[in-house]
Structure formats: C-alpha cells, structure tokens
Image (tube, rainbow, N blue to C red):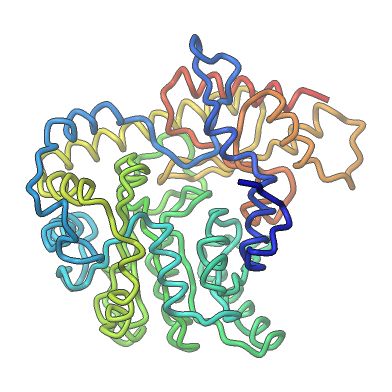
Length: 437
C-alpha cells in the first residue's frame, strides 16, 4: 500500500490532524520509556497525567476478580454502561461526592474514558463555531476534546493577576462571554470547569462555584464540572499560602435560586483517582436533563466500554471496604510525593505555584531559573521553548505551559505521582536541562 502525505482521499479535517500528528513526539516518548537497567536511554516521562503510586495494589484486586458470565461478551445493557455498573457508580459516588439529590442509574452515561465524555458534552451543547469557556491555564487536551471533532470553539479565559479560583475571576468569565459574542456573533454554550484543577492542583471554593453557576444561568450556559480528580485530594503539610480549599462537588450544591438544574453536569472516571487510565471508564452525570440523555443514547455506540472493564469496575466500586482503604492510602502517598518534590524544588531555588492539595501536579517556573543561570539571555526572549528543547535532549518529558494556555512564558507542569526513584531521576534531569545553555 502506498501512502502519500497529500492524499486526496482524506477530508480536510483529517489532513489537518494527520499533519499535526506527524510532528508530535508524544507517542515516540511513550513508546520509549526509561528503565534503569533495561532501557537507561529511554525517556523519563513526568508529562502525562498518570498516577503510578498504587498500581500494584489495584492489580492485586483486579487480577483475582476476572471471572465473567457470557453476558459480558454481548452488547449487554447498551452503550451507556451496564445497569450493574451504573448502580455501583451511584452508590460509590453518593458515598464520596455527597450529592444533594442522590444519584440514580438513569442520571449516568458511561463512556470509554473522560476524554470521550468531554467530547460528548461539547457535541451535545454547542454547534460548530459556538463557544465553550475554559480558564487559563488549562489541561492541554481540553482543546482537542472540545473542538477537534465536535467543532465547538474553545474560548480561553485570561485572568492576568486575578486568582482564577476567586470570586473576582468570575468577572473575567463574563468578559470572555461578551467579547466572544461581539466578535463572532455566536453564543457561548458551555463553561468547562476542571475541579480539582489540572494543572494548578487546587479546588474551587463553594462560593466561586455558586457565582459561576449564577453567571451560567444569566447567559443560559451549561456548567460542566470535570471532577476526575475528586478523590485525589490530600493534606498539604508544606505550604499553606494560598490556604488549601476543601473539595466540594458541584453535585452537593443546592441549585434552587441559583441555576436551572438542567444546565449542571459533572464528569468523573477511573483514570486518575484509581490510577487506571487504561481501564477506559468515564461517566457523564446529568440529573435533570432528559433531552441530553436521549441524545447520548443516540451516539453511545461510539463510546462503548469493554465488557471486561464494565464487569471489573462494577465489582471494584461495590467493595466499599477496599475502595475506602485504597483512596485513603492513595491520598497519603500523593501528599508524601508532593512534599518530597517541593523539597527538592526548593533546594534548587525553583519557583512553583503553592497551595496545592489535589491531583498530582506541580506548576513550576523553569524559565525564571533558566534566566538566573544564564544572565546573558535577553528579557525580551521567550525561554520556554529553549528549556523544552533542553529537556528533550536530556530525555525527560514534561508538559510545557504554552500547550496549557499559560499566561506567562517558562512555566511547566510536572506530574509527581510516580515512584520515588523514578521521580528523583526525572527531577535530576530537569535540573540538568535548566542548567544547559
């Protein structure tokens, strides 16, 4: 078979993705992982949001439970997840997220991962060219999930020197709505909230969420709260400024007098809280929007989860004794890994965004340190790209702030949810890269 880069058989959108993919290093990096003895020349990857701290414990549970009936070799109960899985999710999330209105199976659409869930809500709420708000900095793949196939337009929200978690930040969202509508003549249809936040590792205060809901009500915008890190909240013992905020799900808020309940939707999945990206289980929770659920039934064939994943996760979520213990230990390890990473960064004089208590990220200013070590660099020069080149030469991968909509040059996201020896190797390579010319 002959392959041509300019193949006329591809649609324009496929050509665009093909060209972008050809220049992406991501899969090359993921297919060449570092190992101290087997592959010492591979990449140390602290750029992908994976939690490897509890893999052995989860495997011990899953490997002993893999016994299925023939039902899981069929289409089972449909593309939105088996009744058994949705019932298990309801009980589990009612236990942990404390929704004001208890969840029922019909409130949940199961998808093959939260990326698919994001794409589904973008497709359902926004026509091509219409907007979905996204505060900066943001999880980099939100851009593709929201816009690549659904055709919605991401509307980045800049905060300047305003704390993005504060009440004052809501005014920035409103400005973005008005600017977008004025410049395009199209409406904003959604506000995507990453709560807890990726990459800043903080939770939104309840009062900020309520004010955002009121804004959404004013402009009839869907509030989509991506709570994929909801149970990865831990105690920060090393820095308290800004003071860490307790996580409270959007589901736990009394919506009366605030927002039409049909405009509120929550996303959750197994990838982060259970360190199981490969399981491919996500969920869209919408308690008061029947039309949305009918639309999801129509496209659920395209996001079917594996029968094996459906079965195993049903059993896992039903076992409260195991999951309570797992979550508690995971939170302890995340806190410990954060404290270790912060200590090493401080020893090297590298600035980071403090006050984290959720997820597994450090938002770090490697550009500032690079300038300090290389005083000949002009203040007008953007150094983020140069630091990224150095990092790749040192065979360490982390996410650049430029891809996350960072408002200032030189910031990067480090994923600290890795075993200690792996993390130490990564940090050592990062410091060496910053020292390189």
